Length: 363
Image (cartoon, rainbow, N blue to C red; front, side):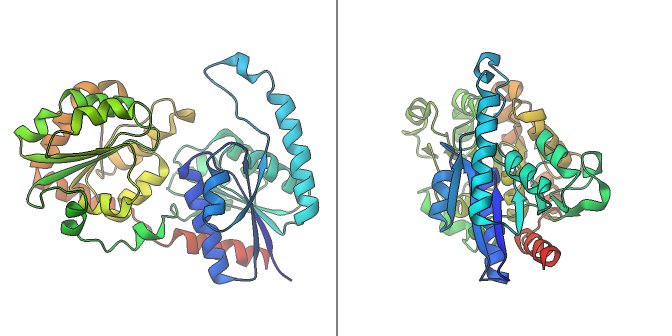
C-alpha cells in the first residue's frame, strides 16, 4: 500500500524549510510515497513549496491577531471555512498520516486527522511550544522536538528529540571562508561580522548597526549586513559607500554568508539557531520580543545557559549590540568557547531521523 502523507503548516521559513526537508527525506527513504502540503492562502508556503517540487492546497485561515482585537472578528468564520476545506482535501487525498510543522494551517488539519483516527505527528521547532501544538500533542502519535526539557509542554512518552532539519546546502556546506569573503567583495584578511535579521528585517539590529557603523572601520573589521525588506533603502544608503560593508535587503546564498562570518548577529528563530549550530558560529542573539509566547527569547536562552551564545535584549540593541559584537570579535578565547559549545548542539540528519520515525510508525 502506498503511503499518502499530508504536511500541514507554514507562515515562515522556520516552518517551511524543515517541512520541505522532512518531505525530501521521506521521498528518499520511500520514493513511492505521495506527499501533499496544506498551507494558508497568501503565505510564503504557497510559493516556496511548489518551487521545491511539491503540490500544495491553500486554506482560507488566519491566526489570532494579538495587536488588534477588532481584526479577529472574522476568525470563527475563517476557522469554520478551513475545516470544511480540510474535509474536502481529506476526502480527495485520503491520507495515511499527517505531519504538523506549526503555522495557521496545522490546527484544522491535525485536529480532523485525530478525530478520524489517522496517525498524526508534530514537529515543534522552538524551545517554547505553541498553544495549538500543545493541544494537538495530547493525541499525536509522536512529537519531534529540537531541544531537551520539552516534557513541560508534551506527554513525555511521545517526545523524540531530533533537532531541527537544516537545508542541505547548509548541512553539507563546503564553501571556504576565502571563497565566501571574495563572493561578497570583501577583504580575506579582515575579521568579518555577519548580520542576519530575517527576511523582513530587524529594526533594532538595523538601527544599532546604522548608528555605530563607523566602529567597524575603526577596529579594522568588515560587515555583511542583511537589512531585510522593510526600510532597506535607508540602510543601504548608510552602508553602500563604505568599502568594508556589504549591504543588501536579502542574501540568497546563505551557505556563503555563514562561511564568511567570523562572528554572527542574528534573531533567534528555531531555523537560524539550527543552522548556526551546524556552522559552529560564535553568535550574538537579539530575540524578536513579540514572537508568540516570546519563544525567541526561550530559544536563545537555551543556548546562553549552555555557554553556547551571547544575548542582547531587543530594546538594548541600539546602544549595546555593536560594542558587544566588537568585544567578541577581538576575544579569540571567547569565540573558541562559544564555537565548541554551539557545535555540541548541531544535528545534521534531523530530517532522516524524523522520516524514519514516521515511516516506521505507519508501516
